[in-house]
Every structure is written in C-alpha cells, then in structure tokens.
Amino acid sequence: MVDKAKERQVNDVATLKALADPVRLAIISALMRTEGEPQTVKELAAALGEPQTKLYRHVKQLEAVGLIAVAGTRLVSGIVESRYVAAQGSLRLSREMFSVGSGVRTEAVDAVLAAIDLVRDGFRIQVRDGRIDFSAPEDGSAGPPAFVAHFSVRLDPERMVRLRRELGAIFEELSAEGRSTAPDAVDVTAFALLYGVPVADAGPGRTAGTDSDSDSDVGPAAGVGAG
Image: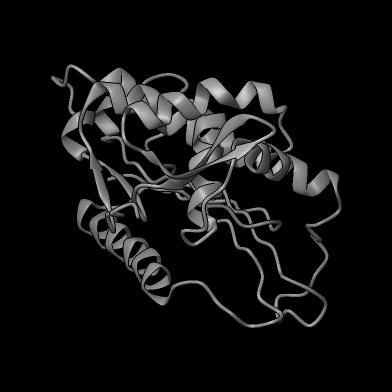
C-alpha cells in the first residue's frame, strides 16, 4: 500500500520539470480523481483520450520524482502491468521559487503555464463534445451553470491582499468538503490566476489596472492556483 501524503510542497527543479507539461499534469489529475483506485497506463490513456504508447515516458518521469507510485503489478499475457496511484492529495508550489533571485524561477513559471494549457485543452474538449452549456441559467435548473470572467482593475495593496485571502478561502473550503457522492454530482473545474503589478512598473503592453470599469464575460468557469 502506498503511503499517500495529503499535500506535497514542490521546491526542487526535477519535480518542477516533471510538472511543466500538460500531459503529465493530466495524468496526475486523473489519478487524484480516482480517490486512490490504482490505474494502469491503458486505463489512463482511455480516460485522457491519449495513445497508450505516448503516456509511458510521461508516467516514468512522474514516478521518478515521486509524484505517482506503483500500487501493484499483475501479469497480463506474459507482460508485467503496473497500476499507479497519485502519491499526494494535492500539490503546492513553494512561493520562494517565484522570487526574482530564485534559480528555478523559469521552471516554476513553466509549471504554471502547463497548468493553464491543461485547463485550456480540457475546456476546448468539453465544449467540442457539448458538455458545457453557456446558456444554462445561474440557478442550475437546466444543467450545471458555467462562468468565466477576465477582470482587470486597479486596487490599493490592502484590498488586493484581502482579495487574495478571499479567493484562497473559497478553494480551501471546497478542498475541505471533499468529493460529493450525490447521484447528480458534477465534476467542476476551477482555475484562478491573480497577480498585481505596481503602477510605476507597468510598461507598454502591460496591465497594472485601469481607471475604467472592469469587464467580464459570462460563460464557463475556470480555476487553478499557486502560492
């Protein structure tokens, strides 16, 4: 039986490089969703819609840094087949890695960008397959309501700190609730990216906030965070 950590703090370059790929992130996410039920590469390939042969090297790289682990093996047609589980319930990137003087800052940012790519690719597939309905009313009476917002506004530092705490509290609350076992439960994806740039540092093509009202578009919801 694999000793699974509740949360893993990532602070080394090898693990960051393993995370800096949307396919590998998708593998970890798929294993986390199975609630500890071991999966073979074949089963992961079917769940992700990827060729089985494509996943082998990604699985090995994740295993090498301890993000996933072999929970057992079995013999299938004379071939040893491994079954994998996620080695942790959640991942958190150490905030020190994002500092200007950090030697792994590039790798840390690449891991965040890979997470963005994963959410974008998954969103595209769900829309293509008709699983997301932008027209669903907010009360959920006609299916899961969806929401997306792009928000740019100028705030004082204290208000931004409060916003960061409020957003973090929402994700902490959802994480503490755990997975629903209701027969009509829905899988929710949320991705959050929040950052502020001092007004004095904002150059051409950069947004440190605006004096105009922020704009938001209604559609499907997004969320992933680090920090």
